[in-house]
Length: 75
Image (cartoon, rainbow, N blue to C red; front, top):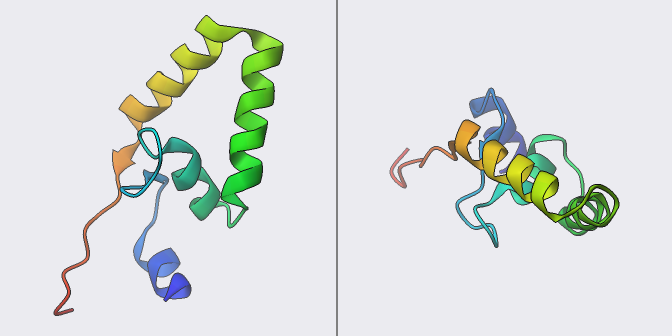
């Protein structure tokens, strides 16, 4: 199933089942990386850079990334 999703999806999408806007989970799925470590890297980035730049970048990514396409059940 995962390979089918990778073939069907060409770009980076926000996950519809993510915690906050689905950015970290979408990036983790696209790069086939652990969601846990993606979120840890995001938290470290938040601590190193500061609250406003990190949250601003996260919100910008959420606005630029399209939501994950819905695959109909019958297909």
